[in-house]
Length: 170
Image (tube, rainbow, N blue to C red; front, side, top):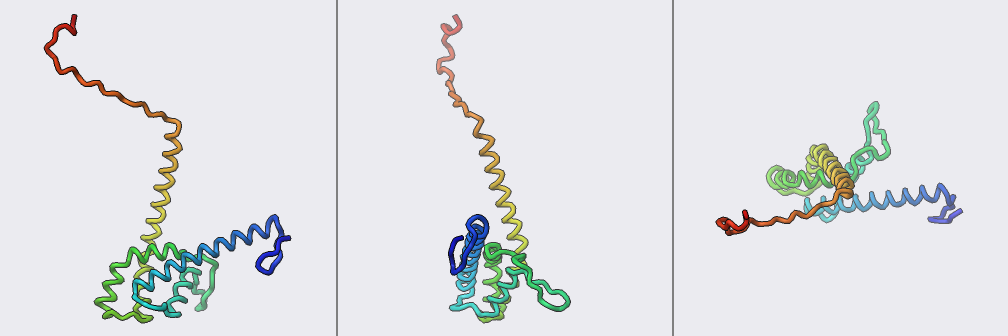
């Protein structure tokens, strides 16, 4: 038994699962912080309103409407890193909308408008993420294949400048 975080865990299974869950939670918290800081900087805010935080967390959790009620599904929505990529893709259009449509306001409505634009770009961001992963896999596969192949150095011997010399033929 291992004592950690005011609880006892079995050494073999439970403690390892706890450590994995703790690492995943820490990673997700770091991704959330990156997204939060990006949104604050994009909308020129001091603190993100609570309604917007709830909307982003609900999007991450993957809330689904069933029979007119919200049903929470455990982490089925897009992760915070993907949302950040979608925000970066839609940054120009969000800035344009803040400047022209919303007259520079930075209230809950403006941030919600930005979130809606970001949601439209989620599929494109997901495709880019998949393409990046495919490219990395292809590069790794090619690097494994080229390990067995040796490259030979080609030495170029230039032609002699004196083409009129008959002694080479004799």
